[in-house]
Image (cartoon, rainbow, N blue to C red; front, side, top):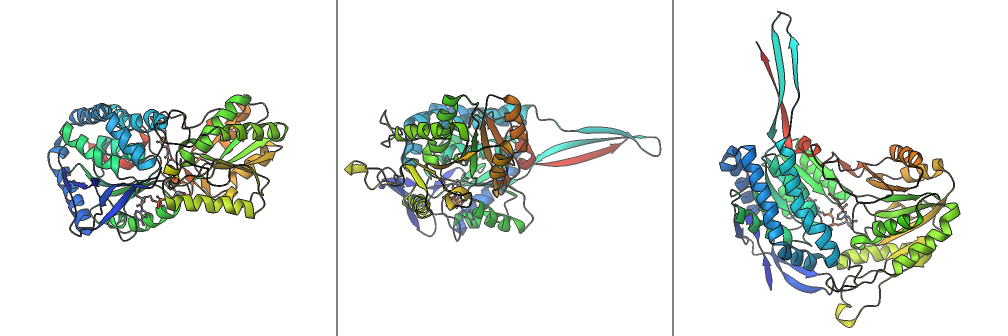
Length: 486
Ligand SMILES: NC(=O)C1=CN([C@@H]2O[C@H](COP(=O)(O)OP(=O)(O)OC[C@H]3O[C@@H](n4cnc5c(N)ncnc54)[C@H](O)[C@@H]3O)[C@@H](O)[C@H]2O)C=CC1
Ligand SMILES: O=C(O)/C=C/C=C(\O)C(=O)O
C-alpha cells in the first residue's frame, strides 16, 4: 500500500493531525494508498519554507543557474518517465497511449520551455527630456512575485501542475502546490526529482488535502502567499478569488468551459469527424478545452451525426495498458454520478440519444470502476442543461445551423468563453469566425494543438489572465519601473 506524504522544505512529512484519506484507482475503485492530509500546521510550514527559500540560495541564483536547474528537472522527469507514467495512470485510469504522448512529455516540456523563455525576457525602456533640459531614462525590472500557491485539478495532473510550476520557478518564485485530492501521486513524485537535481530546499512544496476546511482553503487564505494560480471549476475559482481579496493578492485562473465546435459543410469531412471525436471523447471528455456543443451546417448534419456515432462506438473502454483501449473511466465515483445525472437530464428533457447514455458493460473485475459511455445527443433546445452546463464527461449535443450569424450567436450565448474549433476550407470565413467568437482560444481545422509560447486562457467566466510563453511573466513577476535622471 502506497503512502502519499506532504513535501515540505525538501522533506517528505506526515502530519500533526494524523488525518489520512484514500486514493483510489478509478478503473476498479481499488485502493492505491493513503494520503496524509495537510492541516494548518503543514500549510504554515510549507509557506514558511517557501518564503525562507526566497531569501536563501534560491533567491540569490543568477538566471543562468535557475535555467540549468529547470533543464535538469525536465531531464530527470524524462529519465523517470516510466515512474511518472505509472503514477499518473494509477491515479486517473487514462489510457497508456494518452498519458505517454501527452501528460508526461508535457510535464518535462513545461520546465524546458520556460527555461528557454526566461533567457530572453526583456523589459521596456524609455528616454525623455526633463523640463530642466536633462535626460531621464525609465526602465522596467521584473522581480519574482514571491510565494505562489498552485491549486490543481485532477484531469491532467502533472501537465497542469507543471504548466504553473515551470514559469513560477523560471521567474524566481517559490511554490506551494495543492494537488487535487483525487490525484496526489505525480506532484508527490516531483519532490524526488527536485531533490535529485539539487533544487534548494523550500523552493517546491506540496500539501495534500481538499478545498474548504482543508489544505486548499488554508493555503489560499494564507497571508504569506503572494499570488494564487488555479485551474478548475468556475465556482471554486470564485471562492479562491474571495480568499485572494484579503491582502489584495493577484490570481491567475483557468476555469470551466462549454466549448463549441462549428462544422461548415465545406470542411474536410474526415478531418472534422476525427478531430471532433478527439475533442469530445479524449481523456473521457475531462479536458477543459473539450467540446460539448457541436454545431453542424444543415446540408451535412445527418451525415456528420452518423459518422460521429460510428467513431464514438469504436471508443472501447478498458484497462489503461491494453492496446485496444480507447477510453478510460472518469476520475471518481462522485464525478461518474455527476456525469450520469446529466445523461438522465438529457433523456428527461427529450433528447434523441444517438449513442451511449449510460454505463458500459464491463468485465466483472472492472465493474466497480467509474465508467460512462461516450454519448451523443441531438434534438434539444439551446436552453437544455446539457447544452448550457459544463459536464466534463465524454459527451456532446449536436445541433444543425443555417447561417454564420445564427451559429455565432448560439456559440457566444454562454457565460463561458474558453475554446472553440471551426472546421471549414474557406479560410477567410474560418478566420472571420475565430475573430468574432468570445473565447481565449480558437482552433481552425484542429483541436488542442499547442505551441507553449502562445497565450493560453479563457474569456468571460472561463478565467482571468493568460499564461504561456512571455504571458506567464505578467503573473509570475512584479514589474517595477526605475526612473533615473542624468
Ligand atoms: N480544468 C477544468 O476546467 C476542470 C474543471 N473541473 C470541473 O469541476 C468539477 C468539480 O471537480 P473538482 O475536482 O471538485 O474541481 P474543483 O475546482 O472543485 O477543484 C480543483 C482544485 O481546487 C481545490 N479546491 C476546491 N475548493 C477549494 C477552495 N474553496 N479553496 C481552495 N481550493 C479549493 C480542490 O481541492 C482541487 O485541488 C468537475 O466536475 C468539472 O466539471 C474539474 C477539474 C478541471
Ligand atoms: O495544454 C495545456 O496547457 C492545458 C490543457 C488543458 C487544460 O487546461 C484543462 O483541461 O484544464
